[in-house]
Image (cartoon, rainbow, N blue to C red):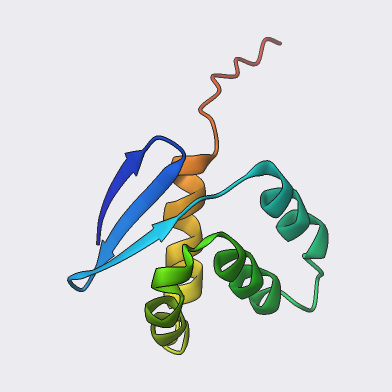
Length: 91
């Protein structure tokens, strides 16, 4: 899996197939709010489907039908989307 960030877009190449995502705060917050202790996969898949470019949705759905892919894609997209913040703890 290769990755690149272009402006607000995140481009992942998975198995030679390009998936382009445009995460935003509204979709991200909705994903976080939908998370439940007994339901993790539906919010993940819904979030990825909300932020993928329409032209790549069919390819995304193919990947989402494979075990473990939803979580891997989510982790990569959010790793690139979430801002880095250095936090120091003082005792």
